[in-house]
Structures are given as C-alpha cells and as structure tokens.
Image (cartoon, rainbow over all chains, first blue to last red; front, side, top):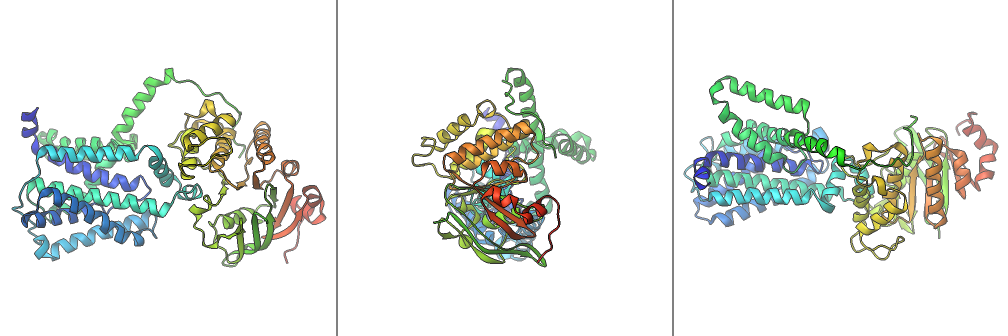
Amino acid sequence: MIDWLAANAPLLRNISVLALLGYSVQLALRAGVFSFATVGFYAIGGYVTANLLKAGWNWVAVMALVIVVGFVFALVISPVLNRLRHLFLAMATLAFTLFIQSLALSWATFTGGAQGMFGVRRVLPQGAMIAIVVVVVLIVWLTQRGVLGRATSALRHDELLAASLGVNVSRQQTMAFAASSGVGALAGFVQVSTTGVFGPDDISFSTVVTSLTVLVVGGAIIWAGPLVGAILVGTLPLYLVKAGNLSLIIQAVVVLAIVVYQPEGLVGIVKYLFSIIRKPFRKKPRETTAGAPAS
Amino acid sequence: MSLLVLDDVKVHYGGVRAVDGVSFSVEPGQLCGMVGPNGSGKTTTINAITRTAKLTSGRITFDGTDIANVPPFKLRRIGLVRTFQGIRLIPDLTVRDNIRLAAEQHGHKRRKSRAGAVTPDAFSEALIERFGLSDVKNERPGALPYGTQRRVEIVRALSTSPKLLLLDEPVAGMNHAERADIANVLKELHAEGLSMLIIEHDLRMLLNLSDHLVVLNFGKLLAEGEPHATASLPDVQRAYLGGSIERD
C-alpha cells in the first residue's frame, strides 16, 4: 500500500488538488451561489503559501493562515456579490479571478511575475495531504445533512421561499461563499507545498474549466461528486496517453456524454442504480387525495 | 389590538397601481378572506405584507410592529408566515424534511408548542401525524398528488407556529374532494384560534369558512365586512360576476 502511494504520488497530488477545487465550487453552488472565484482564491492561497514557506514558516501555521486569508477576503468582497444574482454573479466572480490573474503577473515581487514562484520547500507529507482531503470531504458531508443541509437546499432551489421560512439568505450565502473561498485557498496551499512551484499557468482559465469539469463529471450537488469527478478527471488522461492527440477529444466526449445523459454526474448514476435495486422493497404511499391539478 | 393593520397601502410599478390605497385589518383569531377579480391586487397585497413587494407608501403593522424595517426572513420570527400561489416545495427534500426545515428555522429550544412537542423534529412529526402525512413523509414532493402537496405546504407553514398564516389560493387547481379536504384543515385550524388571511377565488368556500371578507378591485378596497353581506353588495356582485366597474 505504502509503495503504491509513493509510486502514485503525483497522481494523488493532482486528484487531491482537483477535489479541493471541486469542493470549493460545490460549497458555494449548493447555497445557490454560482461562483468562478475559486481559482482566484486558489491563486491567493498558492502565492501566500509560497512566500511564507520561503520565509521559513511552519506548514501547519501557513495552512491555517491561508484558510483564514481566503475566508476573510471572501467576507470583504461578499457585500458586493450579495447584490448580484445568477449570470451577473457568475460574471462578477469570473472578473475577480481574472483580476487576481492580472495581479499575479504584474506584482512580481510577491508572485514572481510571469515566471512564478519556484524552489519552495515541499513540506506537506503525503499522509497529511490525504488527511486534508478527507477532512474537507467529511465537513462537506456533514453540512449536507441536518439543519444546515436542509436550509442550503432551500436556498439553492428557492431563495424567496427560504426567506419566508426564516432562512437568512444573505448570511447563509455569504458564509457558503467564504467557506468555498477558504477551501479554494487550501487547494493552493496543497499545490505549492507538494510541488514547490506555482505560477500563472496554474491559475489560467483552463483551471477554471477543470474545476467546473470535476464538479459536473462527479456530481454538482452530491457530497461525493467532486471526489469522484477528481478521480476521473485526474486519471483519465493517464489511460488516454496512447490515444495521442485524440485524448483531448475523447475526454471532451466523455464529459459531454455525462452532461447530456446524466446531469447528476457519476454519483447520480450510482444513486439511480441503488434506487432501482431498492424499488421492490419500498412501501408504496397511500394516496390521500386523487387527481392532478386542473390548470 | 388588531393583529395586522394595513393603512393606506400603495404598491405602484411605474404607472401601474397594483395596490392603491388599501386599508383593512385582521383581528386575532379571525379568518379573513380576500377576493377580487384577476389583477385586482390580492397577491401584491400579500407580497407587500411579507415584504417581497416594496411599498410605495402606507404603513403595515403586525402585532404592533411596523414591518417596514423587518427583513423578510425575520417575519417568520414575529409570527407571520405565508404560502404561495404556485406550490413551492423543495424537490430534493422529503415531505418530512420540507416540514422539518421550517420547524428548525423556528429554533431548536422551542417552548411547549401547540402540539405539545418540544424539539423541531418532534413537533414536525406531531404535525405530520395529525395532518395524515405519515404514509408519505419519506416521499419526495414530486411523487405526490397535487392536493397532498398543498397539504404539505400548509403543514410546513404551520410548523413555524405562526400567529398569522397568509394563504395565497390554497385550493387553486384542485378537484372537489381535494378542496373539501383542505377546507376541513382550514376549518380545524380556525377553530383552534389560528388567525388567517386567505386569498381565494372559490367564494363559496370563503363564505363558509371566513368571518370577515375583503374585496379588492383594480387595486382598491371595494368592500369589507361580514362575508355574506359583503358578497351580496351590488358593486361586489358586478365586479366578481363579470360586470364592469369604472375605475376612479
């Protein structure tokens, strides 16, 4: 097992970062906030980590600080985002990510400019990296259950209804966005502290697309979705190496097929299969009233 | 003291006067019916009360509190809860979770409630049992008949222990059996002293249930008072049975 983990370290690192990016997007999306800001916070987390590790900080302190920075930064910009909805909100968060990308290129003393940061200490043990992902998955799983889970479901489906039932829409969405940003920054920490490098290529638009792909492929709303999506998106290219130039086309076809035929993602397929198996054993509800609406 | 008071309430959208100077009140324990032709401003009035429509002018007080500065999500806390014209249940959640969602927002450390339960879970279960939803409590709303979905909506609103329940066309689109079913639920709640303001096109049902009737037309208050007497007024008959009434 240990040998396998050591031999597949790059793959596991890639899957871990992809999963964290996916969870970052999902945390906001589940509360009805369609945010592209994940990669912006990924960049903030990455560059802050690189600078602090170079300055000799302990990685645990760096990790804690990076999460707090992402969280607080999100709280600072959330009053503006709270005024926006749907497409306008998505565009505003995309603009934020593009702004951070531009800043990364121009603020060379902090980011290394176009060359990026390199030679950073690779301090994060593999076990700790896996533990970070497990903890995030557990937190997401817990927040999808109980009081918070039901309230976020209401928020996602119907803000007006949620408010009428007493859900503080603005506060819940702000906290979801802040948590999403904290996890996005954490992904940046994991990337830098395991590879030792971070630059503009890591925060390009393709990273935005990849983080969304992870979510769509795995399952946008279900807690296991980003993890399953990260495993597929992370490993698929390895199995398609022999396909050469066709590999990107095959990946695109796989993603397209899932989006069209299974919008709930791969986890949705598993849920569907389970529901078929359980169907014969379920008690049928008694109809208390009959008929459909007349209009 | 009246529970709900609307004082010269106006909601204008540009040149459209959706609600234009409406004043009436709902007393504690009263079941107040609100009728009027399509476009007469009934739903906009409820939207104004629940702060989803912005007041152009006027004042609305609930239980002595001016609601102008109360955020919509805090209205539930002061005891004002509504249902919507179209069914709005959360499709991801089971019937039980839809109801628990509302009960939970009411707070975990609930004092002894009407159902005699303490926690939101127990309170929800008691309501589910009482309103005959036990057999479907683990179902998703989409799998249920229309009338049952409406019943779930009403029970969900009740799980917040409201002082005033605003119902926007609770029997719209239902067949006769479903209407009778919901009417019985409303009658039962009224008998227990719950205050309600109900918008409904089914005038016969409102005449049977309500003890006060408000009639709107073209955004204005056309008449109000004892239900049968109000419904018999010539202006109300003309407005409601298709006659035309000139706008002021």
